[in-house]
Length: 215
Ligand code: BG6
Ligand code: MG
Image 1: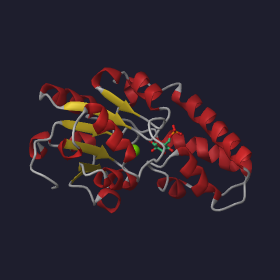
Image 2: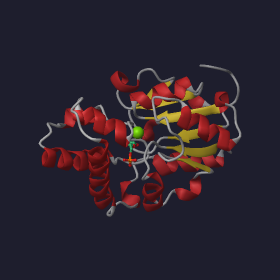
Image 3: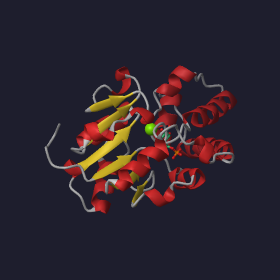
Image 4: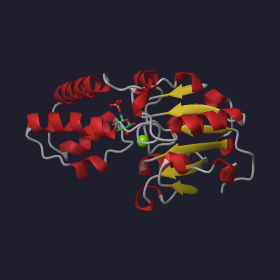
């Protein structure tokens, strides 16, 4: 625990916390990788959790010498594939317990923000039907430096006009937990301890979060 101050806001990551778009990111990267003859497996995809589009491509390219123009073209192509998979996303794709948690926090007077590395986050939350829950929406366009840098979470806290110490971040990525801690915020990790064990609280899924235990 960083401080004993009362938690005033929850800052939510999107992919892997409120919905599981990781599979769509995987399919889109896989399609690009196959077209380019680059090896890319589901195991490789795990490393991309929470990582920006550009950093993800750098990890897939593994130091190959590729022109900036080609890099931009590959990112656009992957994003086109990803957006085509997003077409079918709707409320049915919310992870179990997600809306219940948002409702419970709202009722308790906790302020809510979204902080996702994805430039597609506004489209995704619109399709999920949860835009109205968030006072602040920070996405891949909000800051230059993405997770594990603290910038996105600090930006969200600034927009809420709150100190980092009264904010709690919910994340499923190792890079996301590191970013929130670098920002001086409390953390809930969703997933296995091997991945999010550094968080203050760890739960296997959003449905298992015990709000009373935390605030
Ligand atoms: C994160 C995902 O939320 O957003 C990453 O976990 C993804 O897998 C990143 O690469 C960037 O997303 P986008 O939509 O801007 O390409
Ligand atoms: Mg995530």
